[in-house]
Length: 255
Image (cartoon, rainbow, N blue to C red; front, side, top):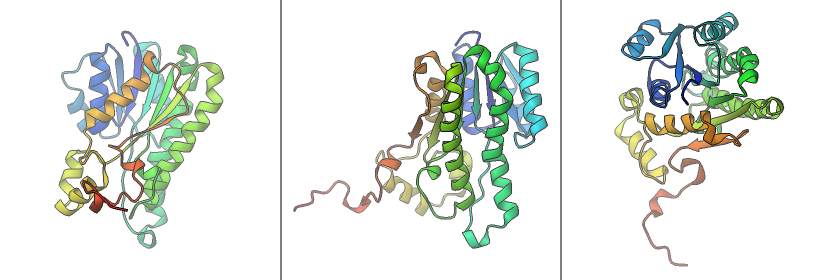
């Protein structure tokens, strides 16, 4: 990916930062975008071939400025990774409209706004869009009415982008991570929750930020030149198991 330019939103930490570092290792230049300016500056410190853009993806003017600053710095945009997202978990009856809108504004509106702002330069390079959804967008789960619905919207938006932009040579794909071993997850997941996830995931563990980033980078690369409109669940098999019956794993069941 030498000389290519990729925009990564939510780049200050987690999957976004891991993706940035993998892209840099492959020779790409990266516009690192985040609204947490202090954390973004810290993440970018010591990295070469990066542009730091302090922007909120849910604000139309910020999305347009993100693209303009990237073009001014690097002259082209080959890929957009819509990774920025927020999580707000709670029961349906306790999810106020304000909380609902906060989640939708970043997780769904942000993907729409950033993609729309980048379409023209992506047409010029026959580039690609990689949207980050979640396994929660593929299968329902407790306490995720806003988060899961927003991610399901991202999945459908990805397919719409692929259908409409393919004639210009622009690809659009979606990565749906399962449970990922981030600092935040490990801080808030109790031993019981961790054990439950391990039981429900066929690989019997959380994924890592680098494992998710590897899938994202592949979809940005020329190796994925004929892949578009796809949703790749990087989830250790979580989506494949349905109910799963973890209590029966490892046992021989006689008819």
